[in-house]
Length: 191
Image (tube, rainbow, N blue to C red; front, top):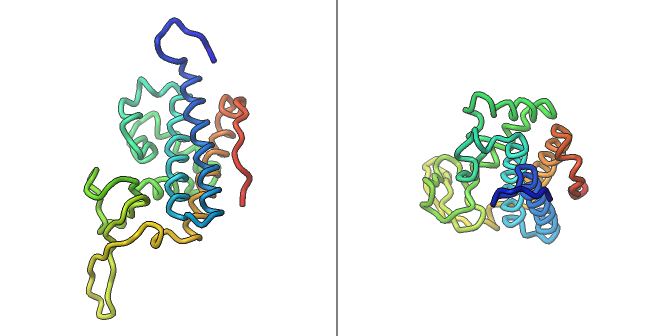
C-alpha cells in the first residue's frame, strides 16, 4: 500500500481493492453455481463485473473525469456515452466481439427491491434478489405479468453463463491493463 499525505488511499490502491472484491465475487458466483444457488450466482457475477469495470476506470485515473463512477451499478452502460472512457468498450470488444454488449446485457438485471431505480419488468428486467413481476404470454397470445422467484427464473445455464462472463471480463481486464495483471490477483479457473 502506498503511503500518502492525503486522507484517502492512492488511486492504484483504490483500484486494486475494487479488483480484489471483483475476484471475490467471481469466486462466490462459482461456489453458488456449484451449489445450485443460481440467483445468488448471477448476483455475484453481476457485482464482479461492476467492480471489475470500476477498478479498470479507477486504474485509468477516471475518478476525476467520471463523477457518477460510485453512484451506478451500470458503469459500462454509462461510460458508453463518455467521449474518452468509452474506449474501454472498444478494448473489451477487441478481446472478444460483443464482450461489452454481453456485459451491458448483464447490467439490466436489477439486484434491488421492486420499484427502486425505475425497475421495468416489461422491458425484460429481472431481479436477482427479490421476487419480481415477469412478462408472460398465455396460449391465446395475451400478455400478462406474473410474480417470479429469482431462484425459479435463473436456471443453472444462466448461472453458468453469467459466471463465465464475469470471469472472462476480469481476465480481459488483466490482459488489457498490465498494472492490474501485476497485482497477481487470483481469478478462479474456468468451468
